[in-house]
Image (cartoon, rainbow, N blue to C red; front, top):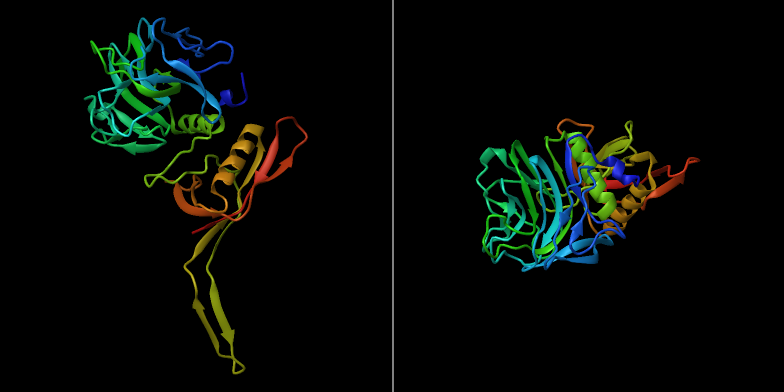
Amino acid sequence: MSAIEQWIPRSGLLAWHKYEAGVSTNGLCNDYSGNGLHLVQGTDPPTLTADVIGGRHGWYFDGSANPLSVTTASLATKHVFILASAEDAVFDDYRALLSGSGGNVLIGDDGFARFADTGYGANFIYRKNDVPFANASLAAPVDGVFGLLEVKLPSGISLPQLDVGWDVFATAGRKWKGHFVEQMIYNRVLSDTERHDIYEYYAMKYLLWKQNAAGSNIFPFQPNWGQPSSNNKRVLSSSAVSGAYKARSKSTIKKGIQPSFESRITEEYDTAVAFNDEHYPGSTFIWRDDSFSPSRESEMRFLSDVQMTRNEDFNDKDYNFQAIEV
């Protein structure tokens, strides 16, 4: 088990489908939950493709490939995380990404860049890259841009047959066109802390970021407690010989941060460097401060690269950076 795989909650994990070097094939995507629910396809399978996101492999469905499938006694599904992308800008059919004989979970809405409302009502809660969407506007990861899709089904649905890449209820068509990379299926609704761990896992493995509703990327990790944070504004002031004092603000108040991340694994440090490299110095990012309840978000700009200190133990590093609110 790799260091980042320890982030994955195991309680209630029904299936965990992902690539493994030397094992996975076009028609085989193994289950690493320990339940043996391997996805297979012997005829016209999707194509296992290298370097589809973050240097990692995934399965490409060309719109006519048969699904990766498994038949089970029952998958009492309540929480799903799936990394995928649809190839086209809008769906040209009801192309299903994830379905089962108990009901569809994610099926493209013909003529739109969204998933169809499958009629579960309040029992269906959907997020893309951690951004929530109403059932009438389930934004899909279209145009080849990958998204981490999260579905909560608090009342649960049973999936005795599970298909990735096809609507199990269709007699023809409705096959996925795009990529499928990895998914986790749970028989319970995960806590916010467990959800955060899973998003950190996907960030470290695929360099895929949480976003806010405006589409800005959120820094994926939380620092150690007790962090210095300043609130300052630029002020012009002068003192005359007579003792008169004049001052005026030249900017609104800005928050500055210098967070410290102590005793972190190498994969987290590498991911922080990659995030910094993507945004510094040209673009802004979102800093989500979980020390407040509810969490507070600030649009920030990096003022430095990521500084690192090696600790004595293996795979143990401290790092920090500076950023300021814009």
